[in-house]
Amino acid sequence: MMQKYIITKDADMLAPRWLADRINYKTVKFLYGIRDRAEVLKGVKINDQTARIGDTVCIDGKRLFIERR
Image (cartoon, rainbow, N blue to C red; front, side, top):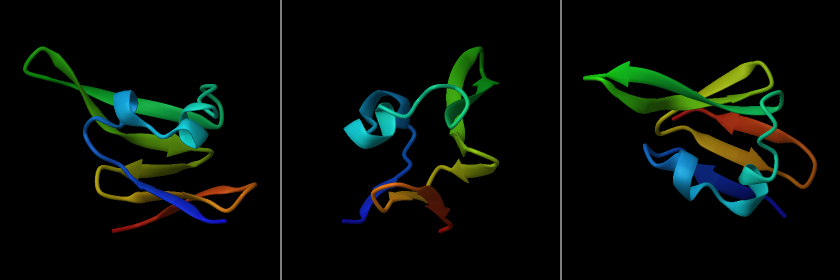
């Protein structure tokens, strides 16, 4: 079963369970930038690909991959 999640600016707090379980800072990593002295989510790095806000992260049971906007 294919599950999809669209990256939003609140993805670090509202990530679905299947994505949050894989955050180990090798496979899935959140990327932050500093804007006006506050940390802002820029995207999610999965293996060697980067999903920006608005992109879709998909899982087909085993593999995580990114669909661009």
